[in-house]
Length: 253
Image (tube, rainbow, N blue to C red):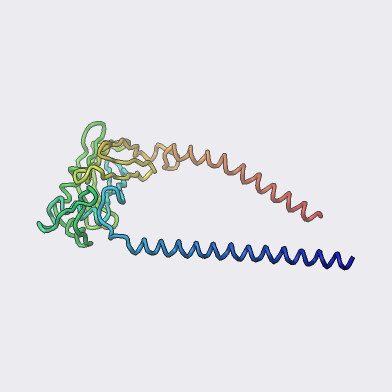
């Protein structure tokens, strides 16, 4: 019996040692792969060109809402796209030009001060009022630009006065699509509705009456919330009961 036990014990020792060696080799291979991946990523990052304005880059954004008979619109764009607009409007001087980048015209250079010059120019206000419009049941709402000095932060703010208290309006956004038709704008209202403006879809009808939904939120919000509760709560309850049952059975053993 002692010889058998010794043989069995030795065999187990060799099996465990072999498994340990395989595990070590696997860890070394994974460590080598991770190191190679990190080095490759570092090289790619180091070789990346500086960011330039591009119509397929970070999109413009519009945020809007209504108060009484007024609609407010906040428009913002990336710093490089503001440079592109400044060149387009001629407010950055005749020496600032576009260059071709893989078939797309982008600013030759960009600086943060470009946005400051653009924000102070009367051309910007005129441009925004020509390219962002609000209409109530087919009648244009009178607009004005109330602030452009926060252009690189919260963006430019526009106010539109409509004839009646606002419930729904049609908003047209065509900013920068005259620079390049590939530009797009992601828009959202303060009650959660979203839309994407493109050169082919420059208009969207917005429901801005917050009283249309419970607690000031649109009906779609509550439909989604109720659906999530109906699915998540029962599932979580079943999982909790299973865990409590398993704990009781383990304690009884």
